[in-house]
Every structure is written in structure tokens, then in C-alpha cells.
Image (cartoon, rainbow, N blue to C red):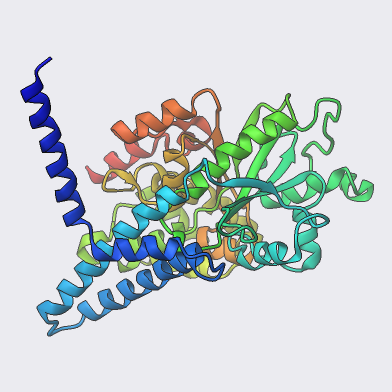
Amino acid sequence: YNKESLTVSLHTRAQLRKLRDACKPRYEILFETILAEADPNCGMPFLVQIRHDLLQLIRQNQQQLSKPNTFEIEREKLQALKEMDTDLKRLLTAWFSSGILELRRITFETSPASVIEIIGRKESVHPLKSLEDLKKRLGKNRRCFAFFHPSLPNVPLVFVHVALLPVIAESMNQIDVLTAAENDDEESSSPSSSIPMTFDMDGGPACAVFYSINSTQSGLSGVELGTFLIKRVCRELKQEFPHMDTFATLSPIPRFRKWLETKLLHGGAKFQDNDLLTEGERQDLARVLECDDDVREVPRALMTCLDDSNWYKRESIAECLRPILMRLAAQYLVIEKHRSRPLDGVAKFHVRNGAEMFQLNWLADTSRKGMHNSAGIMINYRYCLESIEDNHMEYEANGTIPVREGVSKWMKGYEEEHQRSRM
């Protein structure tokens, strides 16, 4: 026991506390004062709105800086706004930690109308077609769960739609058919599909497929609510259905077509990739797209073809495009990186969350939006409960992405042909 060293240590800690308090931005004190406000229209809702406005202001200032003759004071202003955003995001992350959030199941019969309205209005992955469509998504063989915060008790912060199925769904249509099978005998006997139509109801559904996850508060952008939501819902469903052993997503690839167009046509010297298509692929495309054997016209002809959302109905074109687009989608998801992380935002979210890339699905979403964004291609990410944390740690430490045969098989043979074409 050294009384002198203990005195020095306490004195140093006191100095550090004073230094920390002195470095604390004044706006943090303002944020804490707002948070303590008892008025339901102030407090936490007001802080979330402040962050929303702050993000908009940052975007506006970034646009201003892109113009010529920008003054240095504008750059300093933008930097100050970014620092404020970083601090507010850090505070919101602490205030919206998973232990504080309440998980609720949303149903058409029991949930408040105001909550259901927000669910319907904020659905952006697969926009609703009608009120009946919303009822179906909240009905039998489906689940919808949302996180709520005590300070915003009637506002779902983030919500996820789940289909309860016998197998991992390969398309949005398959989800519709399988979840309707138990309620509609006529549809369940439809000859248009060879997929299984009934559950083993003694043990419950074997698989949960997450097909849409949405945030309702732009002011909480970057606060990891979705990460906690999927894991909590997995535990909730496992408790409700003890025999359920498979948890997966049916996810969009929202910027695949934009990436493809940039690589083929508009990338310039920095981003355009003249070797994206192999010589064999170019020749096949020139034939079916009627390029008069001029392979130089293939990239433009391909993108023109994809502009028509009904191209897949022409059998010869669909048959030719399938291996090419699936290979390119696999390359985009697995190989294309930004700062050693997946370029695709949805992929980055799920693999960071501990999921594995399980299977690519051809023409899984033939809606106008699905065809425009990703040529109808979707992907299953699978959450293996026993390996989620290991996958997450490997990804954070080394950027490792677990990729299964259902994705990697589309890239087999490409490297060899690509190398031959460059020789």
C-alpha cells in the first residue's frame, strides 16, 4: 500500500475528468437537456428529428462544396456539422441499445391503427399493392415484428416481415404460394408450381424467411437496430416453434443493375471494365441480341435489353442471360469491395450480422422494381444460429465472407476463361 502513489493517481483521475468535461461540446449539454424534457413532443422524438435535419443539412453542404469557388469557411462548416452528427449518433446508439428496445409482434387485429399505418407507409423493399396485401403480410403463416422505444411507444422504429415455410423460399411468388397454401385449397392445388405446398403442422414450419426489413426513422440512420432485430426475432420464433431449424432471408440486390451499367458503359477510365464479359459471353449475347456479330455493341445492347422489364418472357434471351447475369451477380456480391467490405449495402449488413451467402435465385422478383434494380435476381442469406457470432468475428477481424455452393458455383470456370481471354 503506497499512500503517495494513490494520492497521485486520484489527482490524475480528477484532472482527466476535468479535461474530459472541458472537451465536451456545448451542444451535448443541449442534447441532454432536451432528452430530459417531459413533453412527449420534445425529448427523444425531437432529438431524432434533429438528427434527420442534420443529415439533410450535411448533404446540402456537400452539394455546395462540389461547386467551384468554394470558400474555406464552407469546408469548416461542413466539418463541424459532421462532428456534431458523429456525437449525436454516438449518443443515440447508447440511448437505443438493444436492452432498452421492446420487441412486439404486429397483427392486423391487435395492433393500433397508427402503428399499422406506419408499417404500410414505410414498407420500401416490396411496396404494398393494397390493403389486402397488407392484411396478407400480417396474416397466417407470416409474422411481422418491430422494435419500440419507451420514449416513442407508438412508433415502430424498425420492422421485419417473415414468412413461415417448409423450405427456404427461392422467389417472392413462392412465398405467396406457400403462405397461402394452408388457407386456399384452390391455390394450393395449382399446377403451375412443383414446390411443396403443405407444412408438417405437427412440428410447425421448418424455416423462417425474412423477406423485408425497413427502418422508419431516417434520424436513426447508422444506429444498428436491424442487427439486433433479426437476432431477437430468431430467438422469438425458435421459442414459438421449437422444431424450426432454418433461418434465412430472401434479399434484393438493389444496386446490381446500376453497377453493371457503370462497369459496361459509364465508368470512364477509373470504373469501366472492358473485361467484365468474357469473349464467349460476348459472342453468345451478340447472337441473341442481334448485334450483327459486332461484339463491340454487346454492352449497350445488353443494357437496352434490360431496360425492358419483360425481357425474361422471351425464352431465348432469358436462357442466354441466365448464366451470364448470375455469374455477374455473384461477382458483384462476393468480389466487388469498398474498403475491403462488400460494395452491396444489403450484403454488407447481413454478413456483418453473421449470415452466410447461401444461394442466388434467378427471376426471384419479377416486379417492375425487382427487374429494374437487379434483373429479378435475389439472394438467400442464411443465419446458422450456432455460427452467427463466429462469422461476425471473422468478418470484423479479416473481412471473411462465408460463401456457399449456391453462390460460388456461378463463378466456377470464369477465372480460367477470363485468363485465357486476356492472353
